Image (cartoon, rainbow, N blue to C red; front, side):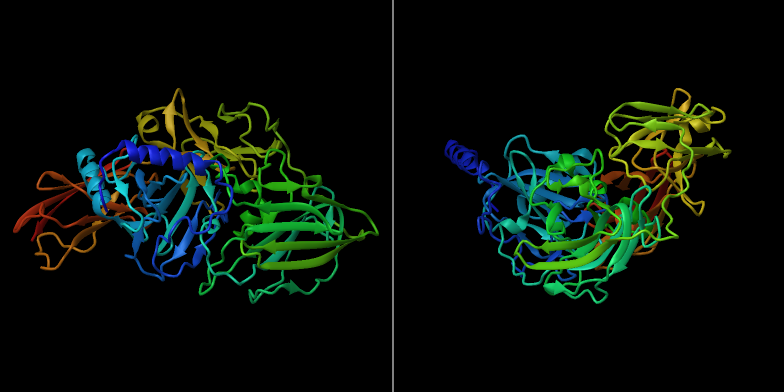
Amino acid sequence: MKKKSLSISFFIGFILVFFSYSTLYAQEYKNIFSSPLKIPLYSTGSFAELRGSHFHSGLDIRTYGKTGYNVYAPEDGYVSRIKVQAYGGGKNLYITHPNGYTTVYMHLERYCGEIEKWVKQHQYANQVYEFDYTFQKPKIYVTKGDTIALSGESGSVAGPHLHFEVRNSKTENPINPLRFFDVEDTIPPYIESLAITPLKKASVNSSSNTYTWQINKDKKTTDSIPLFDTIDCLGNIYFSILAFDPSKNSSIRNGVLSFELYINNKKIFSHKVNEFSFANYGYVDAVINYPLYIKTGERYLSSRLLENGKLPYDNYVNNGILNVKKDSLYKIEWRLADIKNNKSNYAFFVRGFEQDNAIRNNTLKPSVMHIDYNENTTYKASDGSLFMFSKNCLYESIDLEHYQRKGTYSDVHTLHNIFEPVKKKFTIKIKPYKVNDLIKNKSTIVKINSKGGFSSVGGIYRDGFVETKIGDFGVFAIWIDTTAPDVKPLNFKPNKKLSSNQKTLKAKLSDNLTGIYSYKGYINGKWVLMEYDGKNAMLTYFIDETLKEGENTLKIVVTDKNNNTKTETYTIIR
């Protein structure tokens, strides 16, 4: 890697090339980048697939269960951002190129060359492991083919891989990386299961519940799947699909690029994402069958348009809903394709038939207030607790349900139901039974699950309430956290001499409720860099010259989000 001095000729060339490409970013440009890895590129995670509550912004490249592969700069450019996280992308790197694009790398094991040197200097200068730094002007330049990092599994990952993105430098929109690389793919998507959901007084097979059926138990891919039997329905229904796009030499269930739904050969819904804005990054719940996700844990793509859920890459006719008339017959067909135009189709029939024993409506629960998604609304509970919905924080208008009962530090509030998705976080302010130092300094709001267990959703005492912002409905109450985190040595024993080839000191961190907020390590009174792996709750010090021969003192200080602190001191003999 070369560190170049700034020059007028470089910037003139950079600017000219940037503007010549930036207006063309939506087109496909094969081979304008070289591969970031010198191994066959197979995907273990596709672009824009439905992940958690967000669209996947890149391509996960398989590294065969290993870490430590060289990651190469795919084109000349400069480092524009470095982000180190205990969770999320782990060790992130952003490189801006003169062709109008920025490439992004996540879950790295470590950085290389000038990048690694700068990162360590920044961490020691600021006494932090985690940071997010954007360079206001170029400082570290890279040349195509330079080794910029090693692949790893840092951050929130289930195994080693390289998360690779291509973004438009001007808009910061992620673009499907497969538009830039010619990756081998001859395998069509497959459909695992389908669903039909009735609305209000509609029915599917004599029920008001969602009807699902599995059509591909063996997960085989075929160009055409035989017609399914006819399904009896009546009234307004919508359709959902669970489908995946396999990759060669991988069993991972990648997302599908293109979905189309036809009724009697007329397209009523399509979903295809080759690029998106981060303004829509977290709106996966708008395109999935959210109640079905809560029940099954699977993200079925839904044909139904929510009132406030329109995304720019989805198209609907009649909001993706079919009004099934009695004694009518409809051909329903899903058509799927990947970026290499490998296709899968599946068709079945819906018959308009009114069963004598049809159950057409669930028992309506009492509403305490109508919430219009397009208005600011505050609901006040009988104990004075407040639930504040800002404009556009919901995907659709709702008739709010609310119940409350006695708790320990406050009433327990059941707010609406868990089957309704939330677009943006809203504010809850829960009134405590009494205000004291514990409430002021050690309180949090917890979300209580169906088994009585609970987890913290944050909270701060202010003006007689404990308040926080939440992104889903459920059961909430105030709780107290006065317990400090715990620190447990993993690969060393106090007062025991380390082995001559030992390279790290590791400790396990844990917290009972609010979670780890900060962590610091000191050797002989001097701050040292300790890397925190959030998914494994592991703190690691890579032994260097700071740990001297003979007896040393290691101090670890850990604080949770309620400012409970644990300090542990160990004697380390090297």
